[in-house]
Image (cartoon, rainbow, N blue to C red; front, side, top):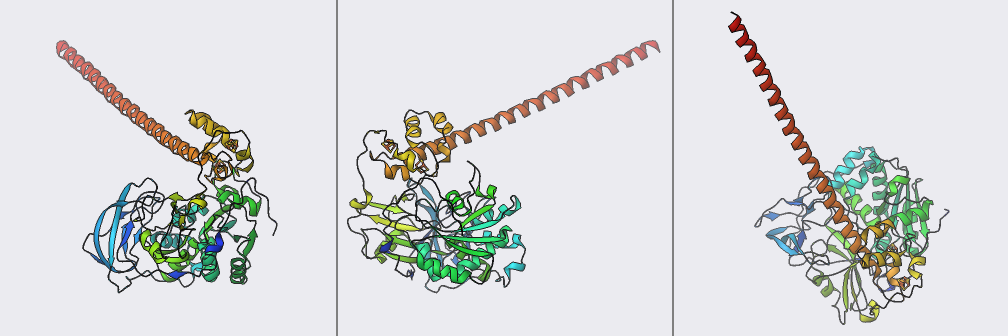
Length: 486
Ligand code: SF4
Ligand code: SF4
């Protein structure tokens, strides 16, 4: 299959050998699970249980709220001990509403929805409903509710479901292991998703540093004419949606548009496995595979982890961490620093890294030497050095004009900068501020429109009153005149 080059990008030290040969092991059930109601993009789920209740495995604990949301479910049977605020697995460290579940050791299933024996004769909407009810979100880290994304076929003419097995972040091997150990489940889930999308073709893209995954997936896909497995070059950030689309199809996604605009929808391989389990067995999303790695970890592993497991439990299962300089959720390029080791594993947690000082490559930043490397390596064709200068001078409008909102936060510019300037931090800050200002502007516009509508209604009412008074006056004058003439 012909491939197309992508611009920029880097080749960091991948260090995948720490876990790539470690088969997935299952974590023993922790003493308490901390299940946040917000594990996805969109509105938080609303509580569907109360403290003291006994729940079964797979029972819904939180309902999805609104158009973009996802429910959460009990990863095992047990008792709800509290519903309270707990530190979120996010650098902000802000508390968020969380359900505390004490497992009873029985692992007793709730009654599940009936398996769909032949999903390909089922209406796409029914598949999307099942995926929504199962709480499945993008498991590559984006955590966008998958059912909403599977609805894109209603708005766009789609040709390809592109299954993302690139896993270009250093250290992470959870997707690699899922593809090697569950290839039939991943291919089945991908075919079901393509049916729900109305996309006739499935392409599974895997970076060529995962030859066993390519082999296993090719074998699983061999029986299906519309499923192709392709090895893509090892180049960070190959796994970014629009870059993978460009590499595999040659189609460029216009700025601030979706890949669906060029006929492609991208889903992660672990999401496909979750869809297989939901559709074939009625099982909601209760666990995920997490890579625990980094030079500070005694025994790096790939682990199937119940959602809500505290990170500290995972680290203990891996023999603990020594001399860790930094703890990260996700990969080292796009992951987020952990605010505490007590935060739980959630649907988007692909990795927990404990990095040593040498691995973090931390250095004090120095002034820009105008070398231009950040421009050369930016995969989005941006000019990071200029954007950062505008942001430093609080000229967000100027930064927006040269495309800061098109930055995918891949961190390639920060990685390559010889002056160690944390460029991506500037861009994340600017994107957050611009989005907040935009929300405020829209809110002000809505308020202004409401006030204008209110004033117009008052004016119409006043006008109607004036007209009624004028009519009453005219009627009275007519009747007075009639009486005078009589
Ligand atoms: S973080 Fe943004 S600006 Fe920097 S290289 Fe990536 S896309 Fe370009
Ligand atoms: S890579 Fe760093 S030093 Fe070089 S131009 Fe960009 S910001 Fe300046």
